[in-house]
Image (cartoon, rainbow, N blue to C red; front, side, top):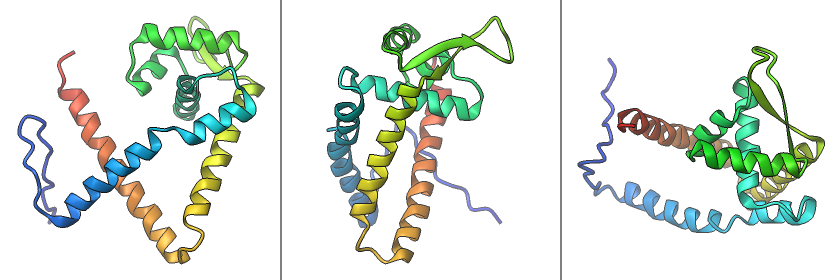
Length: 175
């Protein structure tokens, strides 16, 4: 028997009194404050491409994710980053001008233009990922391996649930 899962209703958010849920919310706020400083991205830019901006890193990650799902287009980047397509187009144009991305014809439909990373873009993304892994490894260095495994599993499950809530809200939003 499947137990029905409670659904988040943005029009009627009933606050949970569960102390663990409250603690998770407090920890999420602390994490948002730490990640809001974008230290990893700033270090990567400083070390690899000082003339780039943090928004360029977001586009690189969106291109990486879009390529994994098929082809990266300006529209896919805009949707992934939840920004206006014209803003995505401007940032992409800046990245093409700086030799981080390049445009090419789609292999599936030659009328469509897709984006691919240049060697500089690949190097920048690799640097970001290496710094992120090093930071995480440092944080969990004194954890028992089973704790790292459990945290990775639970954190993935938590973020997947978070993504599901936002995807469902996107489909409910009139647009």
